[in-house]
Image 1: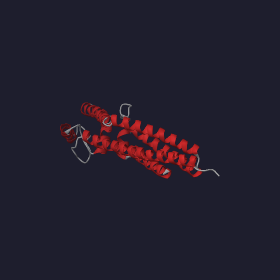
Image 2 (image 1 turned 120 degrees about the horizontal axis):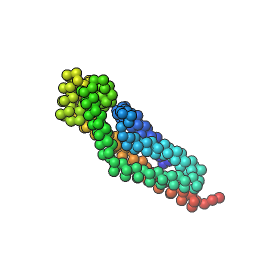
Image 3 (image 1 turned 90 degrees about the vertical axis):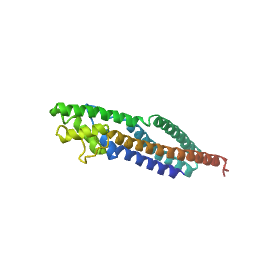
Image 4 (image 1 turned 60 degrees about the vertical axis):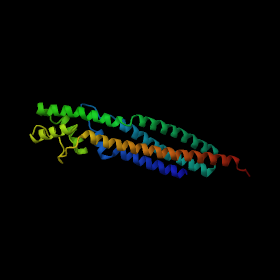
Length: 223
């Protein structure tokens, strides 16, 4: 069972690292406009998952060693670590449930502010065309979208055609970015939630296993 915990920790760590460095989210969350990056709420949950996965691997090794040595002290420490990890997991799950819509909303608000500035600057001042517009272009190319809604998508396509702006992706799609942003981050938040649930279930079985083994060692005859 301890090896299962180590394996699960490795899987969780791998999933978390993939979420942290996945091209689409990295492109959007690593941009910088007016000296500020997009909201980092999504990365908070990912970093928690990375920490949990790494600690699970270490704790799993501790449990395996304690079981091999039949050490009540090590198994007790293993159980305590699992309880602490489980409590952190539950707390993170509650936090994630309460903020499940926050990530998308924050990114949509950030996108809207960049879009408004990019359109204003590109139309009124050609010299500022590469500031907000370049950040907005990253969103559009990454998500294959353009505009805050159908109306703004059509309007931006027209201004691109007239040469006033150069913002919409080269694919020429008219899907609004609000929908794309919501789909991208909502799907990843659900993935984090599933990973957290799997980890919590494994921890429960591991706690039961460690207590049964610890009690068995304590009650076994000593020769």
